[in-house]
Each structure stands twice: as C-alpha cells, then as structure tokens.
Image (cartoon, rainbow, N blue to C red; front, side, top):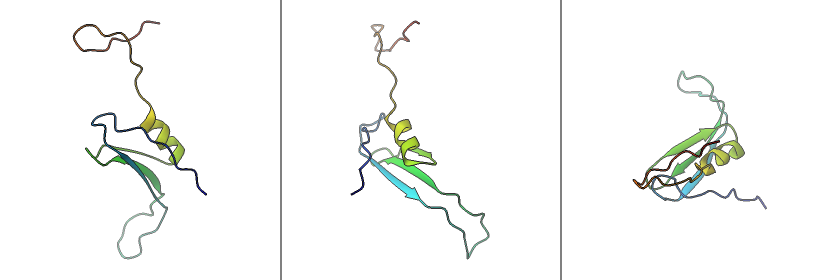
Amino acid sequence: MEKKTELKPCPFCGGEAVIDTIEPHSHMLVFLPDYGGETFIECTGCTCVVSGKTEQEVAEAWNRRAEKNEDDGRGCIMEASV
C-alpha cells in the first residue's frame, strides 16, 4: 500500500491541500511540445499552487513555513538576528 504524503493546510487560507501528478506525454492532435510531467499541490480553498518535478520536492516546498520569531507589537514578525 502506498504511503500518503502528509500535507499541511494552506499557509494563506488554511484550506485543504490536494496533490496531483501529470505524467509525461506527447500531444498527438495539436502541435504542442512534449510535456515532461510535473507534480502539483493545490489548495481547495484559495487555489494557491506549488509545482515541481517530484512529489517529495513539491511536498517539502508546500510544507515549509517561515520560522515564527519575536512579535514587534504591531502584529509583524521580526527576523531573528544571527
């Protein structure tokens, strides 16, 4: 049984994310170049999309979040100094 990739909610609206892969293919009826294939993650709420070549690459990009740092009192998150 395939292990399902765990996806975090959308970073913009909190909506559910779905993943889909379009396999490489050639277009037979129209004059378009061959398609190399790609994997997409899309939010079902706001339609935010991340795409890439592999499911792992795209899932890592989708699940990556900025580090929460010190709040400056105005609701803005300040960069942590190194």
